Image 1 (tube, helix red, strand yellow):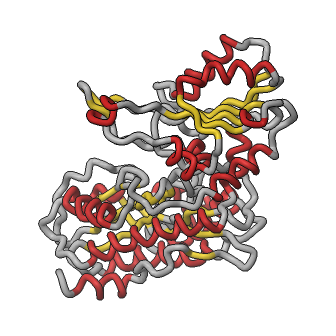
Image 2: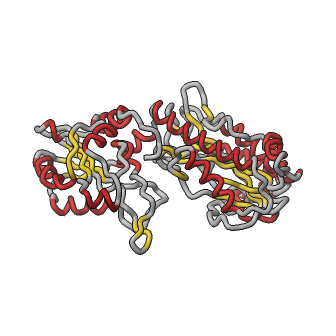
Image 3: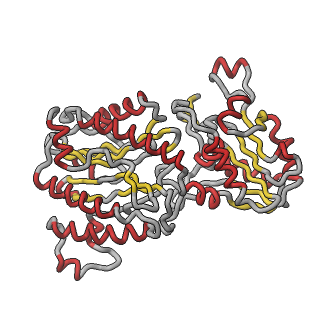
Length: 431
């Protein structure tokens, strides 16, 4: 692992809180992520399934967590199964966890080799009534490839058809939405590494570079500072590309006079930051660009104040849409008269601001949590108003990560340059 060691108490507390939510005589089974084939005999870089990491801290493939708090055999109430290594695996693939290492990382006492799983499973299932299986239940995500939890869960249902099967995802969502102080510190680290990369870009002459070269600067800063990499594919979008919400080609040349919209975040210990900034390639905004930038910035500053207990993403979106509509009118893009005659089901502002303002953040960049969920202390969400004027090649998004507290919102990226004049000042010496 690249990150600094994490106190196992985090994972022990996460498992304890999950077990407290299970009914009597229940079993919960969690599988690690796959090694995903890339091509030929290669795999994509491994990244652990978020729920599995949340409960174990384990980064290794082909691992299984078995929780059976009501099992008569106390030793089988919490078991972690991992790969049994050998000399050939050590030579060709490298180090795999020893039992002692897995125990130290996870805080789980009973570490068994994967070979023991089926026998122990039979004993545990004989005393269980309900079985909680895990799945990815993000509303807007339905991949074609079925993951390990789905496939092995289907096999379990075939082998044990008379048990009562239930969903783990709603339970994990309730837990993961509320970040512990230790998790907040990991997110702060991810935000700090993101800031390092952004400041590196501000100190680099940009005109004539390519978007992928900017991406490479970010990659370098992340890796030398112990980040696991990007929390999501970075958006490095100049000129017309800045108006494409999920532009990830990152191929074009940065030209003087254009804007550069960047949306990226470091992933540290599997916790992801998420930041957006828009800067002038030449080091100085044109007046029109600055007017548009400051319009988004005004909305951003006001929107942050809405991140308080009792509100929700729905409420934030509704208020920000009103603010952005007012700013869009002020920029001369639409008129009051046009607003009065618009189709209420297709408001005119959506031509220039077509996405939501907030999403939950944590072990995934689009973390678990519904837009209807009421904000509570411990939640972390993004705040990201934007403006996209395709006719002028002006795309602007400003995004920080906000912690909900009883005493008001805490901006985890407050130290990252934001004001147009500050950005120009930092870029001035290099452009």
